[in-house]
Amino acid sequence: MRLAFRQKIQRNIGALLRNLLTQGTSPHKLALTIALGIITGILPVVWGSTLLCGILAYLFGLNQAGIQAANYLAYPLQIALFVPFYRMGAKIFPWGRSVSVEVIVKQFTSDWVGEIPLLLVATLKALGAWILIAPPGAVILYLIFLTIFARMPMINPKT
Image 1 (cartoon, helix red, strand yellow):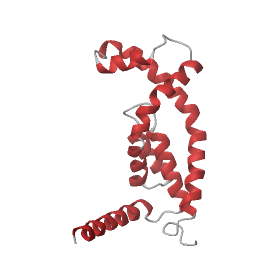
Image 2 (image 1 turned 120 degrees about the vertical axis):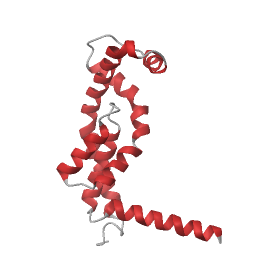
Image 3 (image 1 turned 90 degrees about the vertical axis):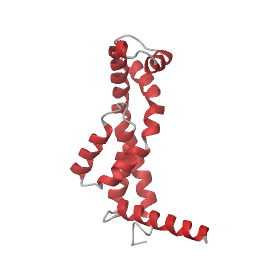
């Protein structure tokens, strides 16, 4: 009895989320929503991705809830990809003091206020790498999600 109730709740919540995220959207729009949400979610600047997702959703007429959900689900990737983005950016933009990963981690766990300029330079280099990676990454993600969503009958009633 308890298992049946839990399964019913899971189905209802799943249907509610599916309806919310796919409501009135084509596979094209849904794929673009998810791709832009993920790419924006890995932006190596902690404070900017939510606002940027809102602006992108407005400009492209995308689902606000869907793009924000993809953005928040990509948050662990944002943290995991900061160092690779920084390393790539440091090779592309060799100006400024070089920062080791250990120094970045140490500054985040201790007195980071004194090292704000150092962290700002590291963030700018990571952001530069993200700017180079984001457009092709968004296209690749869009094509992957479009292929998936175009084959799903709940999103594309033609199939």
